[in-house]
Image (tube, rainbow, N blue to C red; front, side, top):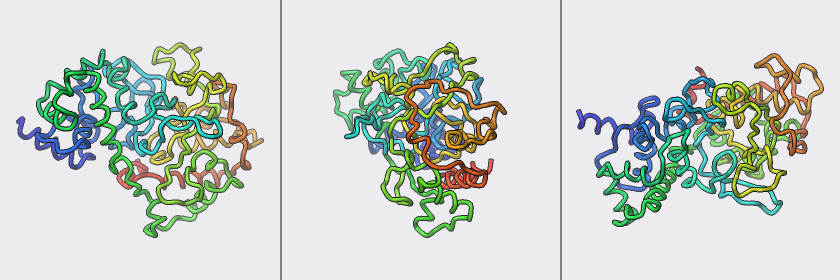
Length: 387
């Protein structure tokens, strides 16, 4: 049985999309690179307190590297390893995360990049080291306890000593950092960023856009017709290969609090998520309520949306943005609730300059923008668009 398990695990590590939502119970018998080590660690539920949760649980490679699990909040926030705790923010996709620059301020004084929705970790390794120690995520008490779990497996021990030195386990902090760096190395591979969506294939002449998709692309890349590319375009020219559809800046777009999630996750209803101001490196009140602009890669299959998962449908998100530019009473109604859009959780510091660019959108143009964003789905997730 153990031999069969090892063969199945090895197959999963070679073909990581096998086994929907499956946790990897062990590791291959040999690890020949840091990336392969990181891959094994990414799927290893033994690194959580109750051995039930891995990186892949909340960032599933089968579901756009987002969390597909239903819980009391729907899919708005994630369930922790203890089977009870719920977070207060939606788990962002880990796909294309490697392209977010290190957290910094640019020449205009704007905060840019980093990992997590508030940039509190400067890079992928920092992000990878966060969840194991988060009490409402993987729940391990400290770094030393995680390292003890690593040392339970002789294959890990051999790999760590080979790649990081024979004395790596003498200092738990260094061993923990090596673990995080290994996971980051895996997350830097093309597996997380294949650039093979219909959009990419169109740029290579391999896919012909439909009329609606073509209209959506025109609208998206033109500030005359929409405000999408103000924040969701990194490269200076439209329709460029390798576009990640985020400038990695921070903005407050007026997202309302997710009261339904707060009702089940134990966070007091009056709590305010201050976004970028929760980052220990930021103490400027003018940054309250700002969150990092997410990539739009795989956006159509990684809902729900916004930093707190308050909107279920991608079309709702487009309509939410459009409310800033439309005087129509119809556009002031959230189609998911039938009520007026609720007030922002943080009413100050709204990025009105960016939000009020562009005209009001008619229904066909809303549909066209949604159709364009569906084009940004990696090939292996295209079947999810039909579900």
